[in-house]
Image (cartoon, rainbow, N blue to C red; front, top):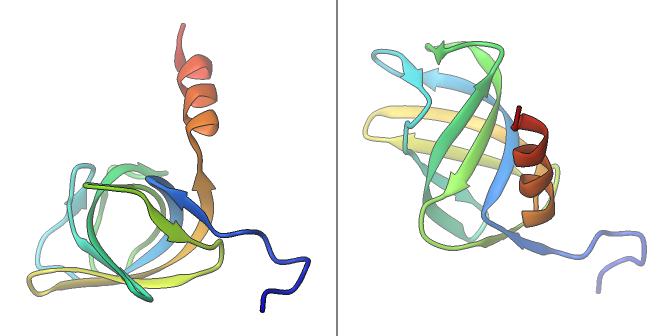
Length: 112
């Protein structure tokens, strides 16, 4: 049973998260495609944007925009997740779910 004040689960393809890189042998930049593990969700996602820096190394933190590679998933803001690719590992917390309306507004704002 869900409390009345809880937001309804929402299937999204894009989301933003605060992440920490636990281990990576080189640098991580936009286009990196780890596997996201969040509860029952297990799917590859692409790092579309890293806010505030061009790349990340072990121990660094950043706000990152992810896009699931294949289909939308049900996430909740505040959910914690692990991401990995080979021996590289990181953890994160979902900060914002991005709907199609949010993405269209971003595209309009970015147009000169």
